[in-house]
Length: 123
Image 1 (cartoon, rainbow, N blue to C red):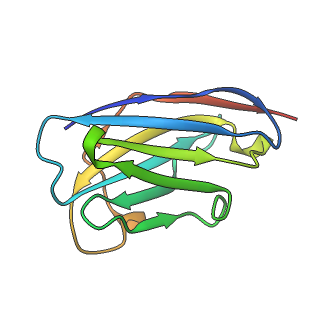
Image 2 (cartoon, one colour):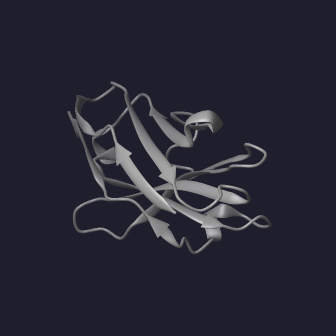
């Protein structure tokens, strides 16, 4: 599976951005697609994930209620709509994927990674 992320940029606090990640290659059946982020000097952390087959979504506590993950089956693309952005959301965001059905995607080891896209939120 190849992943191509896009949509980062600079936004003021309280603003919105939408990230996209297009998947290609191996079948998307039983695929879980997610977003991670890594801020300067910090470890990479889970942000959100979606199970491709049934659309179930998962979020970290830090973004729940502000971010929404979704998918477009026809375009093989996942999206991360980020609202009410805060300076602490500043990070490089990575899309990732793994073929796995059962379990909590927040705990999965992801096999496929896209290139990062930088999100900068100014105060």
